Image 1: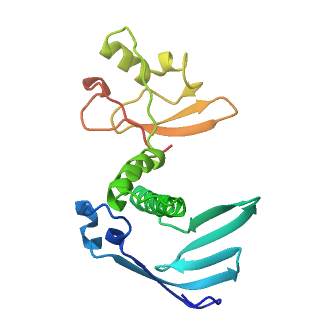
Image 2 (image 1 turned 90 degrees about the vertical axis):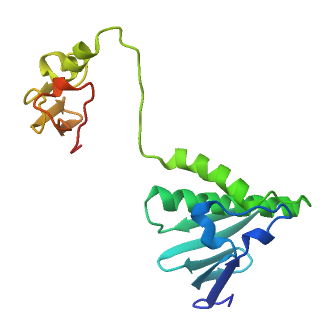
Length: 207
């Protein structure tokens, strides 16, 4: 690494050498079994407090050190990443594993196998970044009756939105309004079939 603005950066991650505990990478990272190299350019150097450089194209990595008594706070930020779950979970789990290895080395402890720990963290981060929200409750009524309550605005406006432009039907777009605060949202029945009542599932799009 050339420690000057615009200097060349080359990082080689030899994962199998990071721990005395042997173990192969998972199948989807098989191409990294012999290691992985990255290149970039130095963006900022403020020794000994800050180092920032580009990472394989457009993303940027920054290390910041802040003294706190006899300790040091290390903050690592990886910016401008692709906003997909695979990238976010992989990058987060990777840096997390490397920082854990750093802590183990500083404490004189042998780090765990990189890939074993990485997979554990990747699973945890997948749950964090998953944009799907779900909840549930037990309603002691028949499925058809509950389903009907969601597609019939005469019923739905009594417990959910304020008004609707019509009953939900497959492929039909309607507008739901939540008073003056939330405004309007479009919603349409999802799936094939002549009637939404044929199914016990309802999907909406266009929020």
